[in-house]
Amino acid sequence: MIIIVIVLKNMDLKNVKKNNMNTEKVTRVEIINHQDGIGRVFTKYNCQKVELSLQDDERTLKIFISPKEELFCDKAKSNLKEKNL
Image (cartoon, helix red, strand yellow):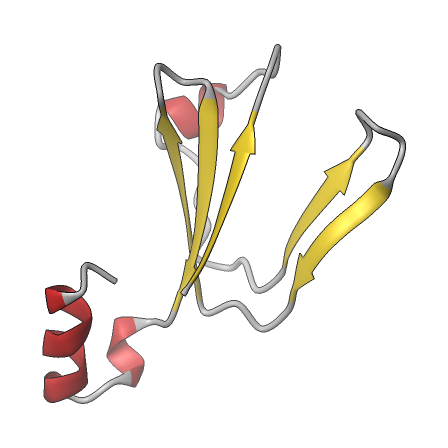
């Protein structure tokens, strides 16, 4: 699993906040840094499961990239749950 943590300032996150953002079709995650003028700083292709979570009084957006559970046998699913993945 890859965990990306981004600290945000002055962004409209209504869709994330209300959990309205459907990420079921997402297969690529990109992070673009316009703040420092760098541009694309991260790209992950072939993502199976992408989840967004607002934390720290809505100041941190976490993006979780995980394997889809249905791709695994029951034993593997059990191991994933034990590890909170």
